[in-house]
Image (cartoon, rainbow, N blue to C red; front, top):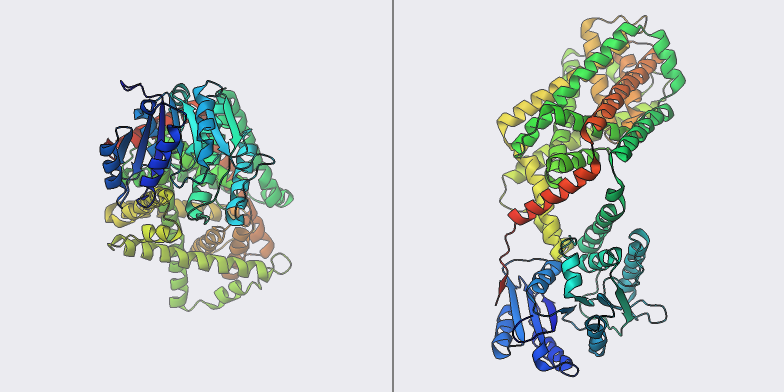
Length: 617
């Protein structure tokens, strides 16, 4: 409360509203004085980094009428950020806001304020979708709005019909209770406030209002899909999942996760074929293959350490090796390398590494992986071309090598995918280098074509952080050489693992040169093929490519080559799962603690990174 005895503060969030702000302030003051004493109200223009005449107009109104205040921000805070900043500095015990276009009929203003001012409710909100009182909205607005509200009611268990109506009031005490929990700074702020109010046991009153659509009614891809959708998922996790995660749940989930990985192996890798292959193979080379493959994992951790160090985060090789183990176990469960998201989550929660940086580090790792195996395959191919040994290669690519064991279609699909992925990897490298040397901001240019909303700035900054991370690693010759060497060693051990499995079968006695040609080319093409997996773990394409080239280049019997491919994949998956289990137990002591740590780190990063300088004019 101020010395003027202000009871009600009305905040008008404004971004480039020079055409309407003066009229809106005047209408608001006129309406307020019909049911409240003139000296008990204030109207605040929460001007959010405008680049038109809104700041000047707001200053003029504030100078002419002491009931008007102007809060200015040099840069965009986002709609929610501007509202929270204004509410924090407002004088009233009843805090109100509505959109400056006055789409909601102002005749409802008294009811909105009195619902809270009288103590009937802690939060009040207008509704366009209460049964029997639905607003007449254009389909392009109505359908997305109904869909969003249904999603919120279903996923976030809200009892309200309309969460985004820009016509709300909240008591000072309720705002103080909720403000520390509401995370979003943009359009989802309204929804999060209402959902958290309900979860906190506060009284939320929803009442029907007359509403007329005004202004731009288009669906904004960035705001509505990326922004609002991702925030629903984030809030669901924070409210419904994180509080239930403890050590017991973590261990149970880890075990189930690992069992699922092993179970899927039995679906996509024929169990009988693997058992028959293991029975036929010499167990000593197979055991050696498992040991060699295990040696590649600390190298993966070392490589990941170098990548993260270049991005400004220094972590131990042991922790990072465990994080890689967990994510690769996830890739055995989720198709399209969905397990990579698990690694980003682990390094975020356990070490505070931001998601964009985690994503950039993973992307850099993938680029080096693809370039390495592309170079390995290309090197063998070049050698075959130089020596004129291309006839066997042509036969292998044709797919007419497996008889009843392997179909030409499977081989050709594997080769086509591998070739496409290899070309894409080289293309990504070229684009990364080219854009790194360009002064033009391609990311922001593309995003701004899709959206002009405040979320566009946020999304662009996230993607820029992601792409700049990849460019940072690829652009430093020293670190690129180290990461490239680590990648070469990792994939060389992968090849050695496959070759040890192959020679474990009776009758496979190839000259060393031929064996290396088969191993490096078959494993490289096979791994390129499974980058776009048709199933979790990429089962299928790898086996097809490996078998085709083992037969075509090495003369290995088709049945033996296929058995070796299955056993090789099974050995590698088993090592991955066992390492993943051990890593989950060592890393995720308590995911609830990890989530709490992540939120604290996120708040610190946001505080340190603030560039806006809001002022009270």
